Length: 215
Image (cartoon, rainbow, N blue to C red; front, side):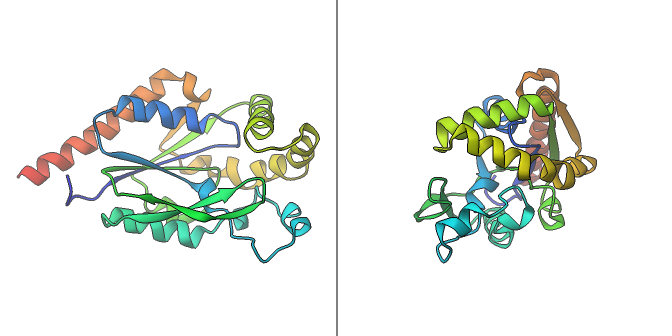
């Protein structure tokens, strides 16, 4: 399947909703297929020209926090079967690292992130759109645990950011994109039925593409 158009699956939901768990479940069920994940988190804006105080003041839960132009460009390159250099974001310095990560194209591309449905250019690239719908309290606890353990944040800073930006931005920009979803997955990765349906559809599209190539 090197000449057919890749399948693009978008997975979105609020921070801590279980997007990554759903993505990992898809990867597990599509074992044996050529598949990659391109997380929107890699595409936070480069902020080298800003002071640390300015970086700390940025609203990272707003669509403008992301370099969506570059994200769209890289996705289109992958869809054209061209390799890309993925930005690496440094969460402790609040800007991009000098390093990049080489990524080869694949037959299935999963786009994962809180704002992947917010821009119509991204939605138009997707064959399947999945919204992971999880209770606010559960999402906050997951976000708190992740940011403290993996991103070097303090409990106080996570709570402050959640109340000031994450929660209001979720209701303003993320939850409304639920209407674009082909499939809404309550309870994230624990919803085995929804994940089975999703991967079954993805396999159907893959099989059709393989059959058309043989023909």
